[in-house]
Amino acid sequence: MVLVFAESPNGQLKKSSFEAVTYGKKTADQLGVDCIALVLGSQVKDAAALGAYGAAKVLHANDASLDQLDSQTYTDAIAEIAQKQGATVVILAHSSTGKSIAGRLSVKLNAGLISGANSLPVINGTQLMVKKPVFSGKAFAEIALSSPIKIISLMGNAVKPENIGGTATVETVVVTVAKSRIKIKSVKRQEGTVPLPEAEVVVSAGRGMKGPENWGIVEELATEMNATTACSRPVADSHWRPHHEHVGQTGIAIRPNLYIAIGISGAIQHLAGVNTSKVIVVINKDPEAPFFKAADYGVVGDLFEIVPRLTAAYKKFKATR
Ligand SMILES: Cc1cc2nc3c(=O)[nH]c(=O)nc-3n(C[C@H](O)[C@H](O)[C@H](O)COP(=O)(O)OP(=O)(O)OC[C@H]3O[C@@H](n4cnc5c(N)ncnc54)[C@H](O)[C@@H]3O)c2cc1C
Image 1 (cartoon, rainbow, N blue to C red):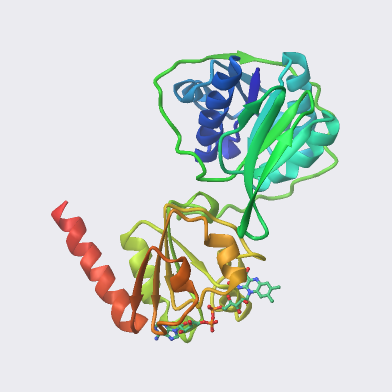
Image 2: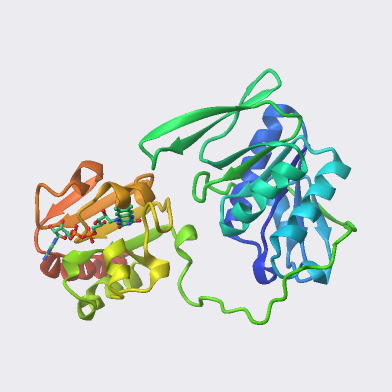
């Protein structure tokens, strides 16, 4: 069977968990086996909802010592369930949590791992062939997994969660949880906007903004579009914007449905983190800016004139809907 680890920080299932279950169901269908989801912790709400996305059953390790992420205890719990249930494929999201677990799990289960897959596996005999972007998104690698247990971590937004209307029973399972070596003293959550890796619309700006005092027009557009804000690296390095907004090779890699780049040149290191976005819109006064080569739509002009006009046009469009 295919086992999908569904993340539920603070008890709430994440969008990436629904994506992972959709991916798990499609993989399981190809293999002719069941897709079973696993949730960890005592606060998980509405785990049965994963049934609508293709989980035949949800296993719930209802243990308060799994309420906070500790990648070592999480790895132990997932490995134990995978072995007990005879999983042949384990799927998790390529999130910060997934990244901290996947490698450990691979060692623990002696399983081949593909991290950051963005397409469905293709079955080739006993192998699973999975495609993933490499060299900062400049190429794709097709990797064959041939170990008895295979692990895939799935890029955010790589598949659309599909509500297929199924139902799942939730079964409580017991796992042996070793005492955590980590003591969490406090948790600070970023409230309000959707976190960048999960955002469907991202409004991002660069050094063309001239200074932090000008970000009002970017924020206004983002608020109108219900988008998350991002920035280029020099902007974060100059403390114009917080570091968690920095996207690119050394920042966060994202794959939103829409990425609007304002006053960003499109250096290769920036593109590495955003060029798999589904639609890219570039606003730049320099018609030779490299970003235009990666753009689906481009506007050549002064951002200080264009961005407010775009916001006004979007407001008008919203009012007519
Ligand atoms: C090892 C390494 C890793 C790196 N990692 C990253 C990374 O993860 N992310 C990242 O972003 N960068 C990264 N960089 C830096 C990267 O090479 C670029 O220097 C950076 O992306 C440039 O940022 P920018 O486009 O905001 O600024 P600039 O290159 O200064 O571009 C500003 C753009 O704004 C335009 N502009 C100016 N005024 C206006 C206006 N009024 N209206 C419209 N357009 C205007 C200009 O035409 C220009 O294209 C890395 C570099 C190295 C060496």
